[in-house]
Image 1 (tube, rainbow, N blue to C red):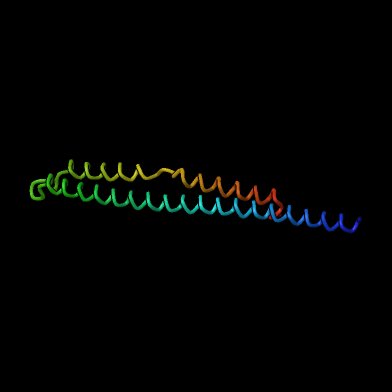
Image 2 (cartoon, helix red, strand yellow; image 1 turned 135 degrees about the vertical axis):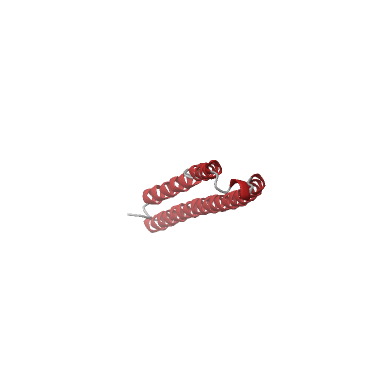
Length: 122
C-alpha cells in the first residue's frame, strides 16, 4: 500500500515538472516570436525610412540644381549658408532613441527575471 503511494507521488512530481517545462517552452516561444516580429518590424521601418530619405534627398537635389545658377551664384555666401543650415537641420533630426530598442531591452529583462524565478539561472 505504501509502495503504490510512493509511485503515485513520484508520478505527480514528474507531471508537475513536465507542466513547468511546457509552460517555460510556451513562454519562450512567445518571447522569441515577439522578438522576431519586433526586429523584423524595426528592419522594415528602417528600410522604409531609408527609401523615403533617398527620395527626399533626390527631390531636394533636383530643387537645389534648379534654384542655383552656378555661374551667377557660385561665390554667394547666402547660398552656402542656406545649404549648410539645411544640412545641420537634417543631422539634428537623427539624434533620437528608438522606442523599439527600449521595448526589446524590457522584454529581455523580463525573460531574465522569469528564468531566474523558475530556478534556471543563478
